[in-house]
Image (tube, rainbow, N blue to C red; front, top):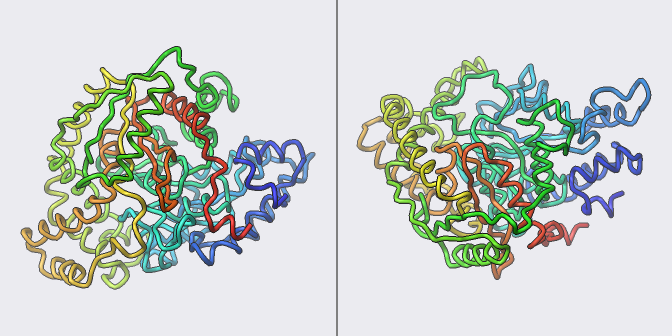
Length: 504
């Protein structure tokens, strides 16, 4: 099977298993072989659970009385990787990319993992993430930098950087990812993949209270649109409907627009939270607008008129309160008192900002979030879709965004001496550095709208550049239909990074 493995997405591999053209064990062996061949270069898979996965594969293959519920799912036998952050897998270590959590082993599956197991996906490992998902790049001190298969000198993005690198490297066609500020869309853009953040609330009921602002959602990064559509059905669809039945998200992905009902698309050339868009990104956006026009849609340049400064501050205050919960209150999860040396300096500083400023300013941040959500909802009464950048530039180099020595000293100072003016100065400088590149996705976490990045461009150096689209809250199916139309018009499934070409 190994030579043909890359020709299939997850749905295609599942169909092979269902027809008995290939066994679940053979697929797992392929995935493990690809992990062993490519992971030393990309450092994407940080936990391996091969033996348990081999036992599950045998159960799927058994048939008859042994052909249990695991084998009845729509993706039965497909090898799968889970992000090492947020989604608890019973019995498997979940580090959150942090030294503090390196021995934490959840006792029960989180709801999204329950759905993943019910689909028959065979979890055989976990993928790298930055500590607590705080950064848009994946370079946790615990595991070291994760690298982009398109260029090992560049980041795969974050926080689902390990997931995106593993999919781009051909280890799996589909991997779990989550998005609290762009953490699906940023790495998908960096790695030439499809990545969708669904509407807020389209998740299995959580076993933990929602974080302030409810910024985060789970789904996946994938090589095909239909794989992500099926995952959304698994997480948020009607369980009474068969996969691909009318009314499912998979059905929407199989019904691209035919030109008879053109979309009204607002083209946003603003950099949103970022400083400015690079020439590569502007070119990709202009090209996408031309492609959409050629497909019959109506594209109109629009200015959002949003106070991005207030939006940035609100987002950071919400994020700081989440950091406080998982850092300074980490003992409620692990039973171990948090220590400064067990967290990265930027994470420890953000948690103290959450305690000093975030909690006090939370009501104001939530009010800004509500105002911005209303502004975008008003815009979406006139437009079906927003077209904008996913990132302000192509993937940055490894280490480019990490705190400098002087910045680290400043972060240590504000936690040792939590003076409000110093905290605000540090937060502004650190966020400006990250937002300058990765400031185009957070807006849609604030508003809760569905948003996706589509791999429509590669620059002259061969680095992927995704293009972002957003729709009205709850209109995920429309985005998937548009994605399927773009996928057919500008196919990307066969594009493979140099690392993959060299090793397969």
